[in-house]
Length: 596
Image (cartoon, rainbow, N blue to C red):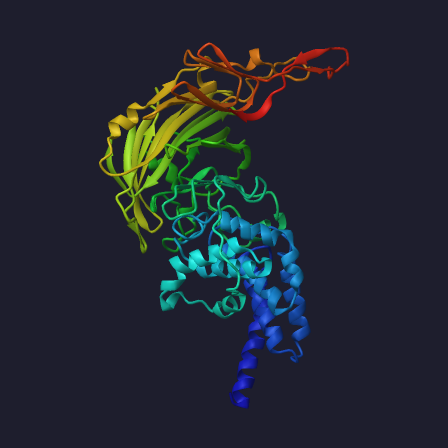
């Protein structure tokens, strides 16, 4: 460049740096770090500029809001942008301590475990199907280099093969020079071998994945139960009062608590998430009814309008509390139970998912506890592209193609709802994820009393074209319980076994009022399922196969099966914890979980 050209570029850079003082945006999220990375570049390019010290002060000030902190974003697009920019800043300014922060390794493992069979991180929150792969590629390459981690290198290779190798010129990002510097091809590749798990924990990540492998043909389901998180308060309040996005949880998160964001089987998408902006909008596409979840309203649906219209009337985000209740890996089954609660609207909802690994199907128990006398309109919604066939209690569905993704085969999903008195079925079309989708749902709308339970049982069965759906659905047999809606159960006949699944909706059934410890015993908490199972366990699964009975349970003392003792906690423990210290109370302690 000529001297005049150099001066012109330097002036542009200085004006760019000054812009960030006029448009000051801070917090542990992507836009603040994008500005910070750009300032870091300008600082190194213009070391002798009279404003350099001022720029550096702002750069480090903005970096500090993210350094060692959790991101306030819950979105597939923006987390890798935030993390890759932080990595780049650390390298530009030569701050190696960044990679000793606990959250750096956490987020890399978080991305790794959300990698789905299609070769990219699962959509959730603001997401574009298989886009933004270059930021994930950068994170995995830089992480593999820093930690000499072969699984991160494998994830980078997987994304490269599925996306980068055939990228269009428009997809090439200005960060590619940094990506090139991150790459170290002396590191080996190691495909992960973990199965279903929490990603990564129940406080920050609040995701659960079910999987039977890491290949393109593997089955994969991701559940997101993260609400409007209880950290980063100042950052979130600043954004909430600065930008007009009432439909999202801060920041870029959808109303997707307890939603199934992705279900894949044999490299085919069977359920997916709500995606990103279709048009310039107030963010209504983030609303709860765009997701595979229960949707609640306190208003009655208008009988003269489609049911979905009553849900559309409210698209703004409703804050909720979320938590994990259970997650356990058994040898042949995986089980999770996660809770979402809205005290204001008067409901507490637990979604329990049981993955039957050998049968490759998912049983979903949605149990709702009513917290106050109120009217509730409750809708159990699943979104697909096509409904191929349907009956009184079921829909056979599939996806064909969206964006540049085309399912490689005619893989389908049978959605079966347990028939229940007072519940209705419905179907509706809506624009979702920039394409026309079909919502299928079971719903109930009426006045409820405080303490009531209402339950939904859904079975998701991936299958090939031509399979006998009648035979599949004949194998599902609901179990009556001795406590009505406070517990629920289902038996499933497979070609070589019978599987019985039992769940307590009311987790307080075990407790009695007397203030002794423990405040439970078997007699208080026992429930009969059908006429052949009795247990106090909060979750129980039994598989009959020939002369062998395999079982697994969570939080229980005893299991009776066909009038025979299947399990009992082996010993009693004395308790002296009476309020007055005078009561001796021997009791069987609950075991957290067991299988045999």
